[in-house]
Image (cartoon, rainbow, N blue to C red; front, side, top):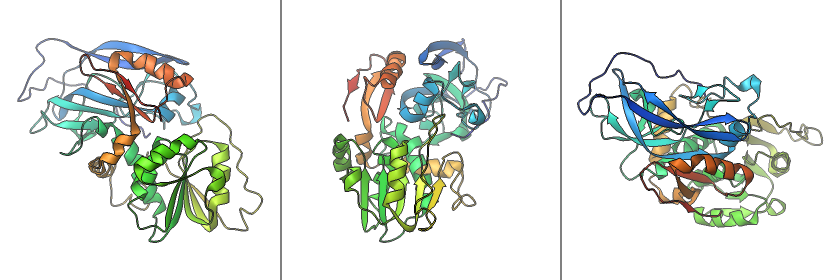
Length: 355
């Protein structure tokens, strides 16, 4: 996740809708120590010109990265690069982190009030950001589904990085949220074959919902033109090297944080002239960097969410007040989820779906 400047402080901004006659409080989730977190209340500043006040409807938990933060496992050497937009505090803690937020603009310039928007903002019930940080959610995309915008953006960037071609043979290793997103986008491409590969046979249900062929590692087909590795495991990376064909390319999308990983670059790696390339969403993929901005990429991502197939990734909902317990349960494995949604509406019901 790329770094970004924090919201400015400034003079009072009077909008066409409302003004702050009294202090407004906001509540946010903070990681307060290794494997610890809680809700904190703060006074919300007034928006300045060119800024908006957003009331959150839903946020999503990006389990892989957010649990790395929860475990205090962000390596110091990349702590600055890993700062999320509008993060407060510093790694390891205390830190306010997260980047999948959808809300309604309550106050802002021009035609912004009343708009449903996506923002790369931590889990917080109200916040003030520049309108340039907001992506309008188009008609046909339900707000709850729109929390997936940031993850779809990651998948879009990887496809721009790899440039799949007509008739390609592709494997996606790791049927979690990111791997599933990549497979979902690729399923509409004119490929010769596409397989979603995972150790867990239960992930076949997700693959079936997406309309994608599923394979266990031993049953995955070799001689791939491109392999997208998303399992964040050494075994998955080793399997990627076996499945990719001669002079093929592996797009590494996993982030291992502070875990050491051994890559078998001996054997036939050089003889087969294989390529291993990182893909990270902090910058627009090189193939599109001169013609697309981060904002363009987010607009592309949210437009793709008109397809209801993405609802397969929304595997549960909890009220905002339950967020500390939800993170704890995701961390210890008692809650299974692809993307668990946090609902900020009063009296919101909780649901859980096993995947």
